[in-house]
Length: 136
Image 1 (cartoon, rainbow, N blue to C red):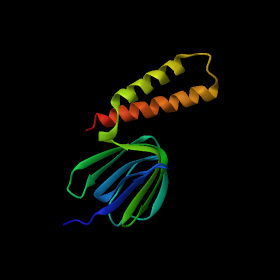
Image 2: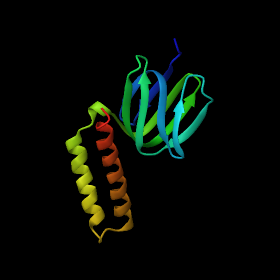
Image 3: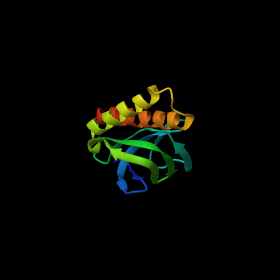
């Protein structure tokens, strides 16, 4: 039987997951990366995307993350995310409403650069949440 790696995903508000996994894939700022038990230690920033892992039972799990950092050690990966939620916890109606609000703000030509950047980030997060919910 293969050894497992511990995955911990936490946000400033709470712990999202803390369990054993066979493999973890995450959206690094320089590209997606995978971690297995025995991985060389490293730390990287994360972009908005999906953390995918196979749990100890071999079931594929999905977590929507928005930014943050990941630290990989030989026996554990810790993901400190600005925001994160499990696929099954995503409120698709709420995410769709957020997407529509962001699209309206982006279409408003009177927005200043800060509002435009915030709307673009909100749109990216909403689309990620909707897509992640569809992975289930």
